[in-house]
Length: 100
Image (cartoon, rainbow, N blue to C red; front, side, top):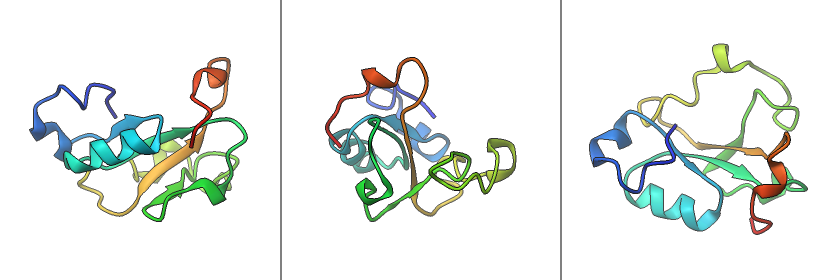
């Protein structure tokens, strides 16, 4: 994924996913042709997912059904399907805006 989706050449939309931290950012990136990987704030739940998102299956919230190495859902737009979301974790989780 990339955080530079706002300034990158539009050809990248077919190769990488846009990393976003809000629904507004998600909509903006998708308007440019990107699938998104959205980091949701701590305290979010599966109920906070958008209709076109699924919880990352390599996270506790996603059921640990896969690992990043075995999953393949984050292969840019080439893999098609829904966008991915996860709940922020780790030491920087508190930096994710509280809005969903």
